[in-house]
Length: 178
Image (cartoon, rainbow, N blue to C red; front, side):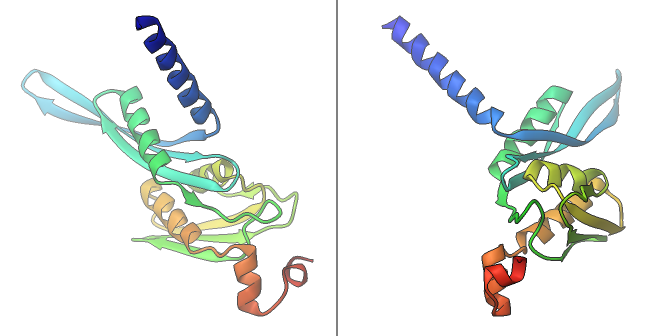
């Protein structure tokens, strides 16, 4: 009886590890804060991570804990729960979009094959995790990494896939992409 439970636990653990392998995890920002108490300083950590499967699904998470590894683990778990679809066509995004969050604005433009990811810090991490290989971006306004990530995701969530874009313009998919 005991032996079969152990086998089941091992299978579950293997299944979870396989599920984790499909995701790319990128740490965008790790922050340390100090609280001054009677005995000295107490440190706590916050982590902002981006998770993606390089096939068009990407998410972000924010976690806080008294330990670095625990904060990162929490943020990765939250990121996996908040995955959204990132439409990709020929390694780039289907059309231009601007995402805004508070004082941060992120402008994303499709690029031709071979351009690479022309983006800084948080936007680059999101695009790499999502599987985009060619994109141009410009971050305008506040450069807070939290706000830049949220602005990027706001823009991504409003992206139309290639079929919807072609339909809205009254063209066929072949006419639009050549």
